[in-house]
Image (cartoon, rainbow, N blue to C red; front, side):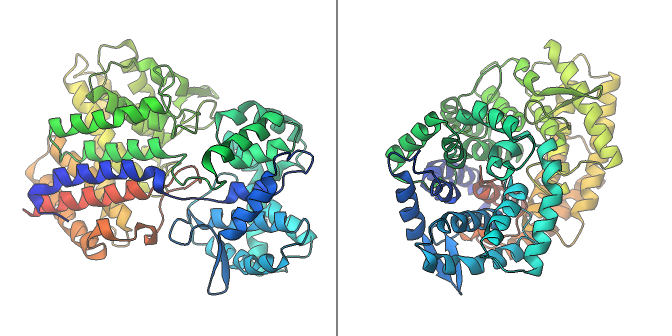
Length: 527
């Protein structure tokens, strides 16, 4: 870490450096393993052979276990590696011309399955695809009976119908594993409808085999342009990463207005390049056309800092009504409230004009939902992250910010403002209690530090609370520094995983900025 007086420029330079590094990170070969299964009647350009050669050339063995990918650290998670190995085995077993390669990969199936017991990251569709591939390989007598593998297959099979009902994008990303489903024809119709919203190799490879020549054409053009079937690790998540890192810098309250404004201006081109729309917002990536409320909320704040007036109707696509309940979802047509999304949008509304007709309406909807969530401690695990501290820290930031905005408006004395202040205090007390736990991960300590620091800086509190917060930041910051000395040079991939990774993004740069920000706060408190 730099000297305390240098942390603003250090944080900014680290953030901007991460922007330039996005395109250099390598990722998954799962899509390539599906290209290996293209039908001969479809594959007029020989993509199957090219994919097979590329996958085989990227297999490496460590301690008797075969991996697929670039040797260093960019295995997104064990779900992704298991999917890649299982899918490769299914492809290679078609003609048995590479039995030696299959023998290298088979041991990994058992090891990765065992690791999944501890791996909290999730790949969209894994619960459907993993048992599907295991079943295919068992039919070919390639996998033997194994307690861990059997348990995993049974557990994931039970989750299949629930995932299909609750996560609409699961159908798209796991379409191959649903071929035996009674509604497969309808699933296929939807997949064909939405396929071209994504530059997704596995979806295109599957649809190319189902009489969709335009999918094969897009697959071929991708290979001609990229000269590889390897999916860039950040090809799907650059806007998600940028938005979250900027969110941390903004609410760290460590940078001057000029520093924030200049940083925001440097990021704006990425948003518009990714197809930002004033009617629907933006998604996690240029390559992922589906917009979401979380990234849109963060983009709203960023654009507001650059003086752009964005109508609040940008959030209207994320308002849902289900069973007479109105809430915000992360995506369109969700049937369950996304409480993390609502905290992110509430935080964005603190940058809006209180006189906008939608301002009071949106705050009321979000507050009613979050109040129930926090009061009853339900659904307080976000869809992006498994830690409650993450959810409570971001909710506290949102409630502090929106209450301050309301306090400067005509609604300062309204019942809503009083209710928001009351819930803000409840969230603060809950976060204090959770951060005092001694068994936290590095990420959880960092989220707690940032949330409490923002509350201390922006809410009007007494000396007793101030001393308490400083004490917690000092204690947790010291532990964090001891665990993660010289954080920006360490291997972040070795930390216990808290993000629910879906292959479509990687949180490593977000975690890096999170740790640097929290350690910078700790150093400032210690001055």
